[in-house]
Image 1 (cartoon, rainbow, N blue to C red):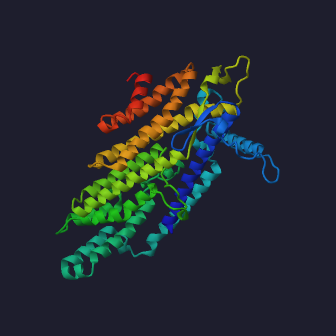
Image 2: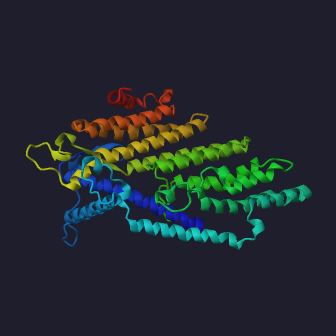
Image 3: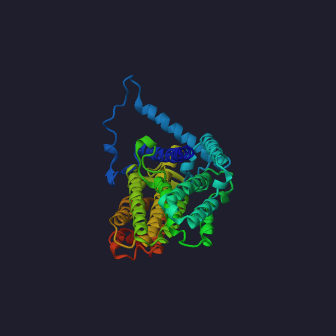
Length: 466
């Protein structure tokens, strides 16, 4: 029950944030279209949709005669005002009306303090529930070290009975309970307690499996024991308890479990760093068992991880409708967005925020997504020794569907407004980050990636002179 409560808590936070991000993007596209500033939207598999073909078939009134357009506009404006208020409060009252300040709005400004407070209270509730579990078990069975010593002594004195009654399997089952308990308490793979600015001691949460008490106890119990070492037992524990929890964060699941496409947010650098480290840590232990069965488990883990990441990336890209601004219709005067038509007034705050989002904020977000996926490609590429169709598909999705089809068109659209210092340097920064990540991880040196990365190489040469 505690594991289920934690899973639902993580799912609600993840999906609330995703829904708010997609809602924000739709609101921006609506504002830009109403102002005649939306050149196109990139949707689904990379198809470009021009404004004139969007939502024309929808009625303007409902069955009660209410104006849907007016109602949608009021709801959108209300969301913008709420986002603005949270942003201003986060900046201690600074309204942030300069162009550069407008680009500092993040998706966290779509989450209210009340929602964060509720999430913290629920986290504390299931943490308290987890803390009660050890009280229901005798102390001698709460230690992995004690359990191992008990079973080792049994095996030493009665080896035949130990083998005939499948004691080794029983030991795995008993240790698994303690492992699941500690993972539930200390393995914050999604780093949600940090993102919520939780007051808990950061040292409580770990990513390295070797830092868990059950792993330390297991190694210590077998360190002085005669006979086989713990590699087989440790590998079984990791495959039985750790791997399922790791893959459940990434794997597409069914609607009955309330989690459609995993809990991992691929736009989050913190989650990506944490999960990449966890993946590497798991592989280190799976690599320690080099027999045929261990190798099979290792390959299965890598294949499932790669497939899941591809599904997560594809789903997130297909769920977005990326607005591209008509930058040729916009100019900047006195640090304000204005129409190029002479004598026109500056755009209102909602429109200015929408322009800043379409040009800068979403580009930063997509760039971070690309860098995160490149980090994953590096981890998987080093671990997968033979050609992999799944890895090739993931690589293609990153360089083609994400970088070439989505990020580069936004960068290209900024040329019409490059007179402002921010927009003059911004393309260099974005392309430099993606190109630098791919270069550091050795992906551009691979023959199979030359054609896939060609647009990125050209963009790097054009914007940064690399």
